[in-house]
Length: 278
Ligand SMILES: Nc1ncnc2c1ncn2[C@@H]1O[C@H](COP(=O)(O)OP(=O)(O)OP(=O)(O)O)[C@@H](O)[C@H]1O
Ligand SMILES: [Mg+2]
Image 1 (spheres, rainbow, N blue to C red):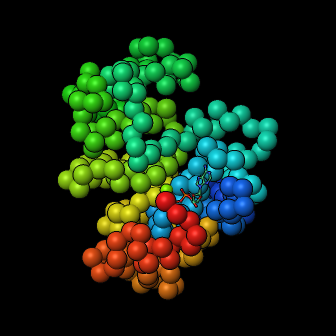
Image 2: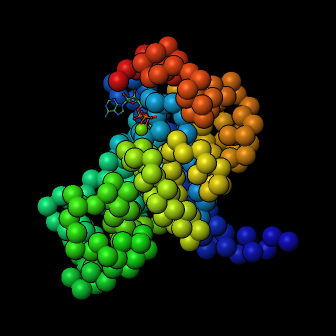
């Protein structure tokens, strides 16, 4: 009884929203991604976890071409973004990205942070851009901060503005790279709440995070990376709850119970990253 799938497929809408095939990325002699194959379905939330240096950020950055892959292909919404002839700007417009550091423009207010990229990149007129900005500030619960400057906001509020800014571009896909890692613990929840809302709205999301409770609750799938490969993936209950691989178990032990292991810089941390150092 899967006639629906067949009809959808004929329009091209049934394929994965993000498809990564045989992705490799090297920086000089350092092969950081060593053959990644991953599909993210439309509306799916995939959390990517793994030790420092395992290539999580590089993977996200290859999806929106902030890094150029050394080999392999990436498709977003059925378009090959790694095609040399692709319009990179057009691709990036379809992909919102949120970083650990919020990267807001400090010298303009919240509304202008949201309207300037729309006007520059999407060529929206002032009133249309302002309307979209208002809508997205409301979505992240910050309508009352429209005129504030970034420095007047808490870290959690700044990150919600950064999310609203990305949403104002009307992306089909959102990539989050440790969006709560720079926040004080009491501010993490408000950012995760916004992300939970986006997931519920059906946004396709790839989220690099150490927030295991978020992964368990929101992710359709958890991907564990180590050494530039996907070691295992599956539903959170499986990967986080009953990991199959020793490397995953070791990582989760450190994440879930940091007090049980040594601090970063000690042997326990060093064996994650091989020769990599920070
Ligand atoms: N622009 C770059 N030039 C050279 N090496 C890089 C560059 N970006 C990343 N690397 C290297 O690639 C490796 C993977 O980095 P990446 O940032 O993807 O890891 P990560 O899994 O996101 O780690 P973390 O959890 O610390 O953020 C590291 O060894 C890093 O030093
Ligand atoms: Mg990273």
